[in-house]
Image 1 (cartoon, rainbow, N blue to C red):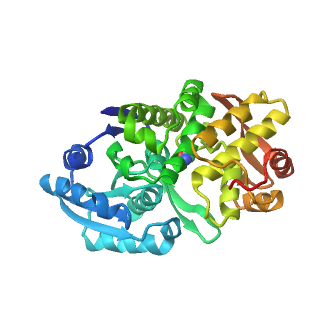
Image 2 (cartoon, protein in one colour):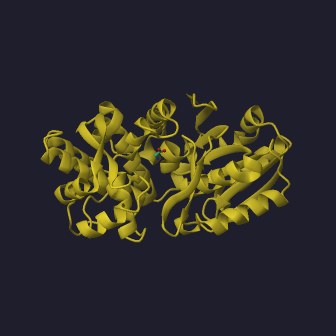
Length: 364
Ligand code: GLY
């Protein structure tokens, strides 16, 4: 098992390993206290794991209630949040009790926002079951719901009391759900760790690898959590350095919106990373092999790197992104694999970057 310390203003640990669902009760007892717990999960994950988590918590003396919402990003919305809050209130949670997110990024974001707002904040435990949630969204305290105008437009920073990541859960993920998380894993390599990137080039993090070498997968995930941790600890509220984590996301989020959220997040991030790296290479910011290597590693992880969306549509969608500040936007440019910088550019310059970088075509 790996235990990773996250020394944010509220310090906590990430426990990463196998057979951790069964140990939820003792881990939660160690950090939260309280007598009641509400597990928030979705209709895909709940039937697989909620009973294991419930039994473990009850064994520690907790009174447990389970709130299950329909799976899907479209349910990360205000009405599900209100339903969750009403459920938590009916379960009579006090501020010393805890809300537990059991699932992927959607569940973590929604449950975290509920925990941040219930009685102005109660204890919160992240139990990520997807690769994306383990390497990215469960660490760092971002919580949110989507509004009609865009993704994650209402939210709060609310750090968890502990993250319990049982990598045994990854075994049930479909290939495309693994690939979804790999967009963030590749991103971490490009922004911070050339060695991690080289490992991914040699041994792609696929569903096959999860089935065949869980020890290597655990080490890779641990390294990703450390990278995310280091950035978040340096800049918890995203005033500067944390923006590095948006590498590939300004264009990626826009492609996601243009495609009506029918493309996986990992694919959209891959399209965004390759596009911005191609634009950076065209300006001499990085060598031509940087976009080539990023594109090759994305493809090796099953991620498409071209889009059917037009430059105009992508640019239009990017205007609604919360990373925009007036008539400018912060973007992340790669200088080499393992080192990026944050640049504040005008919207006109951003459009030129999209034009220079985006590859239109059939593969997404
Ligand atoms: N996923 C980007 C961040 O947590 O800042």
